[in-house]
Amino acid sequence: MSTQDLPDLWERMAAFDPATATTEHTDDGLDDLLAAARQHCPAVRAHSGQHGEYVLVTSDALAREVGRDHTRFSARSGIGASNAAGIGNQSDPNCAPLFGQDPHLSSGDPLVDQVELRRRLQPLFTPRASRSWRVYAATLARMRARELVGRGQCEAVRELAHWIPAYIAGALLGVPRRDRPRYRTLATRFFADDASECDHAALYRYLREVLALRRDQPGQDAVSIVLAAGASEQQALEFAVLFSAAGTLTSGDSLATLLHWLACDHELQQQMRSHPDRLPALVDEAARLRGAVATSGRTVTSPTRLGDLELAAGEQVLVCWYAAGADPARHPEANQIRLDRRPRDHSGWGAGAHRCLGQHIAQTTIASILGATLEILPAFAVDPAVSAPRRTFGQLSGLDQLPLIWAPPAD
Ligand code: HEM
Image (cartoon, rainbow, N blue to C red; front, side, top):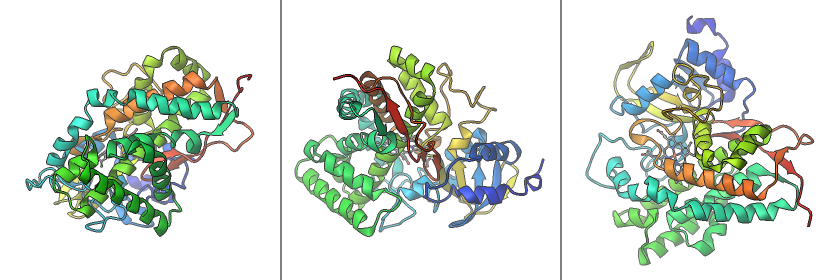
């Protein structure tokens, strides 16, 4: 079947506009649409209201091909999550640190060279270093769940899922413990859909304080590492904003998805209460099937072929990790949550040189947060009296709201 047999694909795709930062669109029919694109035209020219024409990639094989071949597909791009992470960048808005640089363009300068910067940051992100955040993540989640439990209800996207990851991202960045509630508030406002210039300026002002502190008192944190590499004030600030986005929004969206799964499936919730050791596998399934980083942008560097398409240098490519994770050609029973997938090899964490640096931290801390939440909150469900949660979809993917209810414990 050719793309002409799907005449309304572009129009419907534009209605979701995955190339833009907005998260106001929801998933009515989105999964079917992406499945149709994946089956009939896994690389296809689509159109975005804001960015014009781009090539949408939906199959696992082509997503990996684009992610892995950075000589043909540059990560310096005007669309996708990598671009959104460059928000407010003065040096190059299309070029967030790490995301926007290509491994083969090695310059030997750790601030420009993606491979070198990743190498320096790596000790913070190893599986072992990631495990050291378990206790902190669980303690925060227990405190938060205890604050909520007596109410018998909460709006779990705002009050739970997006509450805790900012504390962990702040700690990784080098934000002192006493300031983490303030950092959480500022980062939440900065990334809100209706954020103002004032909200942007407020986070920047606070991050400058962190930079000054870490220049005076370096620690084992990401800001200290970047400063030690010789970053200017502006470079370090842009890096801190990237980390704030990568560390808070993604984990918050993933937690929202997982709480929704647990609230809708009581058997699954019960299984996780009895076997919390299965939570990391569940977190990984959420990354595969409902990847929080829904799309990443790339730019074609020289004329090339992708699937059935001939691409010209300069064309924008939007890799939809979200669609690739549900590709039945790669994952049997792709739409089912299965905790026994072996190997757990999917592209929800990306593919190639820009693959997620924070994967182990995300997996460990999200599993710890869920485990501690299940310890404190009794069996919970989605509140049927409030409008049903809707999936948000743009560069990131999560839920617009998640009203949960449970039976509050007797005093
Ligand atoms: C469930 C949570 C998360 C998911 C699903 C996720 C997913 C991804 C994906 C798909 C990419 C590849 C982007 C591309 O190729 O353009 C990526 C890159 C990245 N992620 Fe994550 N991520 C998560 C959490 C985190 C956390 C918690 C951190 C840091 C604390 C983090 C830091 C990064 C960084 C720095 C990159 C860019 C790496 C580079 O360009 O070299 N991520 N992530």
